[in-house]
Image (tube, rainbow, N blue to C red):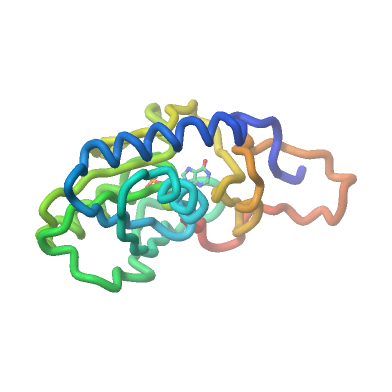
Length: 193
Ligand code: IMP
Ligand code: MG
């Protein structure tokens, strides 16, 4: 069986409304300051692009890259930094912008890493929260949607590097094998983030 995008879990319209609300909340809670939004590559790139346009105030942005090694649809829990920030965050009002919180390990790693750099404040904005999957307790300040324990694709979320460009968020589903080569879309090596 091949795996690919199945039914829509969260539509582009629902995403737009919620991202607008998150943007306003971030602006409200950082009034008088210019927050530095730190997007977590690659998954949060699409969310980040929409979020910064939903914040009705000046912001700065930067990116970090992390990779959670592990085959298939589960991250291994071994988090590796693949790209670092290009600016100092000392004394800054930082908001980590993450695509999805699953076990919580990626975010826990990022939080600890950024806290050593002495930001003035450090908040977390995650588009999706798989509450049931949590293994490490991490505080989330802004959450788009709590979702069930299903693997999702689209709006930045990938499987083996594919499907990030879909405008809606879909659940992963088994698909009939008659639609092309039998090779599965499941990643052979790294689960990218
Ligand atoms: P963690 O288990 O909270 O560390 O999540 C690790 C990373 O796995 C997240 O940042 C996502 O990039 C990725 N991930 C977790 N669940 C999904 C999913 O349903 N679809 C696509 N990527 C996911
Ligand atoms: Mg991620």
